[in-house]
Length: 317
Image 1 (cartoon, rainbow, N blue to C red):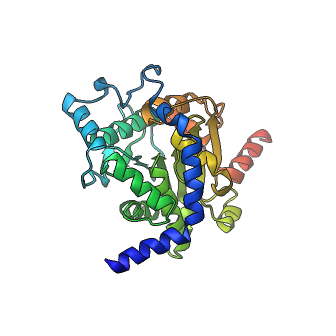
Image 2: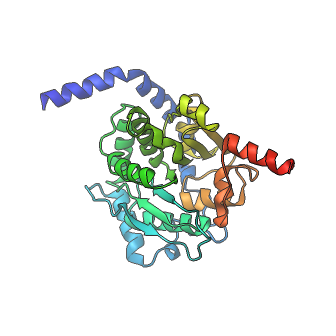
C-alpha cells in the first residue's frame, strides 16, 4: 500500500505541469459543459443516444442510464468479438477490417447503438471493442489518470492485441474512436510504434478520432517518408463548442498528428446525434476528408503520394 502511494505521488509530481494545464482548460471552457448534450432531435434519421426509440427496449435505455450514474466494476461485452453488420453492405475491399472503440459513460446498449450506426453509415461490418463504463465519475477519473498522469491502466490492453492480430492478417485496418476512445488509440499507436516487432504494421492503420479527448497522437517520421503519407494515417473531427473536444484535441493541436476538421460554432459530444450525420454529409470537410470518402460504402482510393501518382497517370493517359 505504501509503495503504491509513493508511486502515485511520484506520478503527480512528475506530471504537475500537465495537471495545471488541464485544470486551466477544464475551468476556462466550463460554460460549454451543458452543451455536450445539445442540440437534441435536429438530425433527421439519426438514432440518437438520448431517444428511447433508438433502443430495442425500454430496459436497454434504463440500463444505459443506470450504468452511467451508478459506479460499479463491469465487464466488456466485446473485446473484438462482436461485429455489427449494416442493413446493406457495399462490396467490401479485400483484406480490410473496421474497428470501433467507444467513449466514456458507454453502457453495452449504447456501444451497440454506436457501432450499428457506424455500420449503417459506412456500409461495412464494424467490430466493437467495448470499454465498459464504471460510472461517469470513475470513467472521468480513468481518463484523467491515462491522459494527465500518463498511466494507461487497463484502457488500451484489450484492444492492442486485437489490433495487432488484425494488422498481421489484413491489408488495411480502420480504427474509429470516440471521446475517451481517442486516449486508448493514442496509447495503442505509441505501443505499436515503439515495439520493433509491430512498428512496420502501422503503415496499414488508419485512425479516425471523433470528439477526441486525447492530448497527443504521434506518427512515425521514417515510415511516413517511406510511405508518402502519414503513418498511421489520422483524421480528427471536432465540434468547436463540444466541451470535451475543447479540452482535448482543440487545445492540443501542436502535439497531435493528423488533419483536424472542426465546425467552430457546433455543439454536442454524442457520436450518433452530434457527429456522424455531419461527417457523412461532408459538413466538416467540404467533402474532402478520407473518412467522408468511405461514407455510404464508397472507397476513397489510395493515400498520399500513391494517390497523386494515380491522378497524374489518369490525366496523362
